[in-house]
Length: 273
Length: 344
Image (cartoon, rainbow over all chains, first blue to last red; front, side):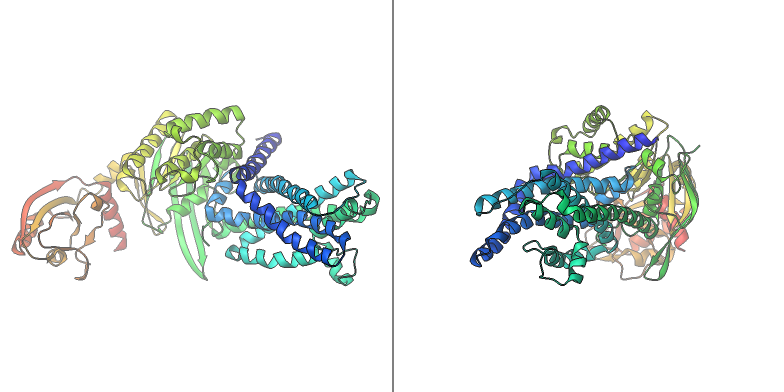
């Protein structure tokens, strides 16, 4: 089997796995309605809070943060816990049995998740913008697109890394996801600025900057709301690019490790373990 | 080159600090065009061996080859030419239809769109899934889910198909359909082969060219069903039909002195033999024949001259013996005989 055959196989595997995700969205549209409505209700509370405080300039911050939060939820529940769920449904064994690369399967999950979540995220952004008096000052759409892409690649890289780690930790997966959820909400500045504000001490800001969501939300706000350009977010771009590469490499290593453990111990493919 | 060569394979699991030997120096070979049945009780090591051949598990020691490819070193090449179907496993994503699921699996093997369409249509037809082509999988019955599962197993047109209890929990019609299909599949192309594990010994007898009996991680018998049956010609299988005459009677108490293996057949559900060794039995077992019951007792005897004495004992204990007939040993008799021999 040549390298090009392998490439074709893995592209097909990515497409097929992404197809399952996207098809799931169209087959169960009520899931999407819930996934758009619930974040809108959460962010509405913060918007009303800022309105009460006459801090109208933060309302757009909240809507952007709420839209990006959809990606974090998807990474955590739709990516990180996915292999674990695939094991419980017996699908993981099917994957391990095929010649397709395991990384291709994970990338397929990520691509499908990105497509679905982008639709949800844009819906949240559009409805939030229609419901509340917010304004944007977008001067550099290319920079916005670049930041957005880097952010979701880094985020889904993190999701792919967690997917293998969650599987290694077995049934503790859902608890780990719970443990990760709130700290990320706190540090990533979904409803308030983190990096450019004095809310947190510098040490916390450094830690927060290691989360792709924090950097992404901050840079998107700078470009979309404050009218900044690519030159104002070079640090964000550099950090996000490094994070994206590092997380994807780590994801690949973790996946290999997961497969080795699986084949050596023979326990990871056992359902309900 | 054989389809499968298993050479001195051992697999040890670590269970809470305790070593559990699942496979203990297994040697096995499957020829091309052959269906090999792997029989054994739960925990005997059947699924462990299947998983090693499917590249899902590493052996602790030893080597295994599938069509010449080492399952450890050439795992990717092996995965291209094998497939695995396990009874009762999920056949795909519930939200997708039968056709979509088959397409999905075809893409994991890199099949071209045109070939995938062709093979999916053929498999849907072969598995009689036509009316469910666009039905979501979560709406299928167990039997049709298993048919889809089997179709999935053929999606890459494997050379070696590993079937791990493929008819588990299926009704007679669905099970027969699957058995017929797998026999035809091998017959159509003699370069193909199948390794089948099953608890249904009649199924193994019907389908398999060769049988390997695995017991506590070791192969204890490895021959064609006919040769295996001939191997117990020193035993006679006798069926005695009796009616109890108004009292509950414990069969064990009657047969214990003869030290024979026997089973009680009340009907078709009892065909999965549950032999009791009368010399090892205790009086609290469930082999009591109740007042008014009509039953068949299937005995495996080393010495046919015991028959009159056994019949006499049954009559003396209040049974009415309506028939005594000699029966041909089945694969189940062979299996029981071998297992009992090793248990001792």
